[in-house]
Image: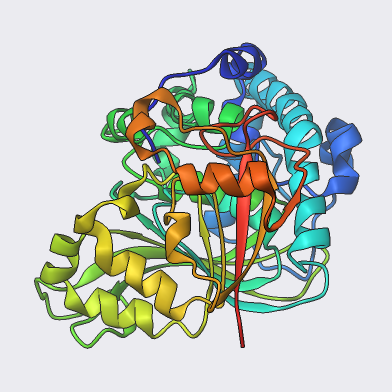
Length: 395
């Protein structure tokens, strides 16, 4: 989530993405080499009960339906066919150049091929289930939040009338920077999503879930009640401290395992927690989560974000982050094992005041283990400057 300038690399990627940006979600590695063939030969899974959420997500993702339904006729639209073909090509390219490598990193460095994680906690995430899933496909639930609104699924009737694919164009515009660079621009997302056509994060989350070839089983509106417990929304008593979110239940490809991704639209500054102390109670109840922080605008450097910083430091079993998360000085040697990846030079110009000399010393003096990265991530996504840091709580 971000406010920053678009770099040269983004321009290069965007030249191939401008018509297809909504489709670069997490495809299984074996599919990346020939994704068009995969789409054409994909057969319906008769054991899966289709629903409107999965069908809608497939349509806006550029993927064909698993059987005849109300979207089937829309696939004859030549604009949609062009969109689907270009999207699949673009998505495969980005997966091959970046996301495949992220998956490999997850297996070799994060134990994603063998270990199980109950909760993956991703603050300041926006709708970015895509990137975190590459690192941690082994989590049972993904808890994410940002300031952007929750949003709704597009209305099928409106999509049927949308012969010019205006809705899909809005999604492509919202995703262009993220797919080229791995992060969203907060200002850009707010402008593009605050429209009648695209009103929040839910459609993008659903698109990403679908593009990792997972099946959406169910969608629910949820809220954290005044006691800090997660509830399904519907007939609840209105309370000013309720924090609302959206939750998708999904099953990954070639698996029978059910997972959830929950996104909350909320302010988690100290002032935000003062207004919604129940949300802090809920976050603290997440038992020893693995926390991922990327492109977080250096907010946890500020005194006004001390609560969320404290929650992460006090309750996380593992923290994977870039330099925009929690300053390295907070991860003390007596509490944390540390591994560093890539190279830290300095923040991008927009955040030049958040330079960490102690982090630069770690990378240049190599007091701790420093390993290479083969992919770009975060604001500094050039390989010469990109980095990640892994902190594991000592037992």
